[in-house]
Amino acid sequence: MTDKPDQPRLKTKKPSKNKAAIRIPISLHFYAVEIVIIILVVFIINFYIQSIVKNYIANECNSRLDAAVNSTQEFANAFSSQISASDEKTEENIRAILVDSIVSSADLSNQATIALYTLDKETGNYILLWPTAQYSASYANIASNVVGNVIEEQGYMELNKTRTIDIDGSIIYYRSMQFVYAPKISDDDTVQIDPETAKEEINLDDYYLCVYVNSSSYYSFMAAMTLALIQAALLAILIAGILSMLMTYPLIFSTQKLSRFARRIAKGDFTPSRGHIVSKELSELGDVMNQMAFKLEESDIEQKTFFQNASHELRTPLMSIQGYAEGLKYGVFESDDDRDNAIDVIIAETGRLSSLVENLLSISKMDMSRSGNFEVKKQNINVSKICDTIIDRVRGNFIHEDKAIINDINIKDTYIYANENDLIRCLENIFSNCLRYCKTSVTFSCKRDTATPNVIFQISDDGPGIAPEVLDHLFERFSKGADGKHGIGLALAKAIAEEHNGRINAYNQSKGGACFEVILPVIVHRDQLSKINNDSTK
Image (tube, rainbow, N blue to C red; front, side, top):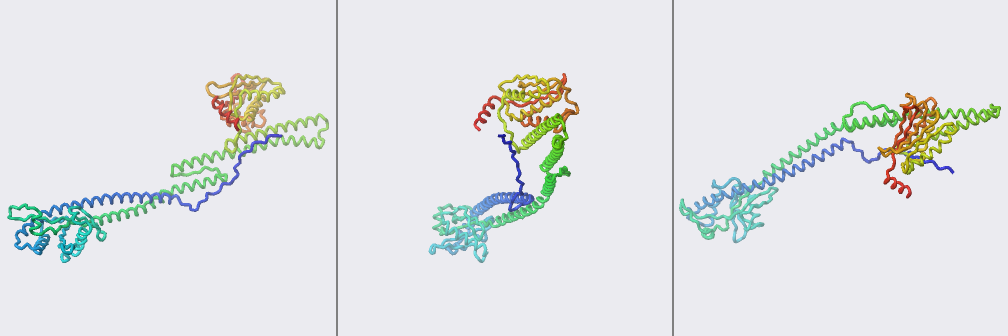
């Protein structure tokens, strides 16, 4: 039974188009990002402004309330003068004097609005004395609500503290105080008496002042600022849309240009793409695609040349085989010697054809391995074993050609990670080439390079050497010298060396003759044991 050859991993599935329910243009992606950024910025700015403005409104209203409260002391002194000068201190007269004092007083600050109210002891309800509806209906309505909030919700224990109330969407800052004054005896002196005594004397314990500030104007200004910010955001979104189209147009144009170029490459047209591409990244992509097209064009030409040369090399032995086979069939060769010679030619050409086909298959396998579509199986191999095997393989050819093979093997306990059959074929092709051109002998040596972790297989002959016009193209496919066969052997040797992370060199020796070196990396001791253990468990 023959071993089944390694099968390449062919990728035969045709690529399909990307499926998507909705394909959004790139300009809309940019626009959406810009809108999100604008909205976030506006939200943050608006939040920041509102927090600052609200603190400013609270501080400003408190400052105005402080100024108004401080001014009530002067008002109390003015009221003291009027109440002391009055002969009638009845409740009606006191109320009239209080209201008249508020209306006519120049001491009260205009930083806040003043409200005067009292509590009816009999009914428990509050009575707003000032401002009245006759003076100002709107002021009276606000004052009534403020005072009502003080009486009904906060009570008398909340005096002299700043509070807020929402009246029809307007935030009112207010402070309530109990009305206390000292009676005035003369124009120069004021008698300081106990407040309780003053209350009992003129019965002022139920009169209160409330100063308040309507902050609606401040909040109206803040609302105007918010509206202006929203309008600016809408304008920014409009400008962002225009800028998105202007900015993404070159990108879209360049992308479409590269897409057309890629479609041309898929159809086999490798003409480089010309023209300026705005985007740096897409420009680099265009350069890479041009390089790819150049490599593909080279590969395409090389492949076509390869098939042409391979067809020619295959046709020559086939024609010889066919001619001699037809001669045998139709009795062209009369003597037994002629028939034997014809059979020998058929056998020789068959061997040449078989060798050519094997080399073509091997070099195709190396190409597929380099592209990732095939994996060459490798294992740890003793270098001494490789040397012994290759000598046994080529010894018969040297004996047949009456040539000598000189061995200089000086290496022990050295391993390389390689495919044994491929490496033997690589060395065998070099031996075949040297045997063809040598005069008397071929020298084979193998040594460990002390400077680098490499092993060097060196094969040299005593022939005429490599012609200068051939030396630069020696390892190219179907490149051969005057006595070359098909020009595949050395190209295959180079492909096998590169597959094993090595290299191959060829040069003419100073003493005459050609010299070939195959340099391969060796396995260090630790890696060697690890790989051997891994291989043994598979």
